[in-house]
Image 1 (cartoon, rainbow, N blue to C red):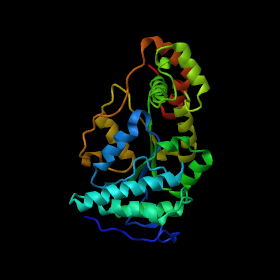
Image 2: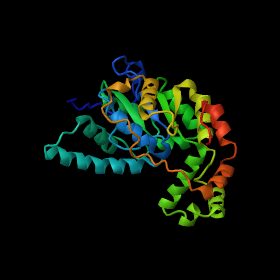
Image 3: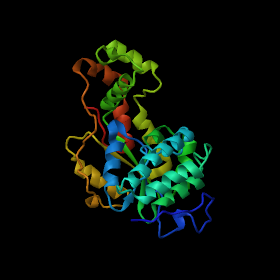
Length: 295
């Protein structure tokens, strides 16, 4: 098992940067910036089963967006769990312990967004390809996207795309599940329209907007992948995603099935309203990535 890596959290020299190190290569190798309908969870499960990949032991590791102090507190809780597992004789990757230790003890609440700190955290992965799932990056502003893309010039980015009607329906149900919207919006077309037009967290054009922004900055380093194409198997999607990241999907040990992805169609009485609310999003997606269409 890999020994803990104890490098100080400092600004790396040009020779020590992961981009300049042939031993460590691109760091991170890939970042998933969106997880429509739990696509990020599916991808994280696939990547974690790949013997050449190490994933930080914090789900949805959002370093460049959100409140870093919350992430640090979560890391401390997770560290306690892993230490308990260790003392019970369970197998624990020492890199996970070291990563969580660094997040809590070697960073501060103001560390979020500091690329030098991020590089050092990623270096805990040693010689493995490092992957990060951070769906919150879907909401990054252009200035933050440019800083991330320029700061890690070998990193590939992954974005999962749904049919826009399905994506909007999924966002609406998320608001209901979280208690932020009444259950009537899942049955009444007028209530549904009022919610979508008034709720800032729901954006029917979010996918095309994200793709247009990231593609204009990252170019072909961003790969967009459909999760709801009935003619595409999960194994073929996995193969395409890992090929984009420079890895072989054949080394994954997890089943490629869509387990855990919620992709239920909306009720018929709401479909016309949803189609109207998404407008020309299907065409915008087709121009942005080539292929996604509203059925």
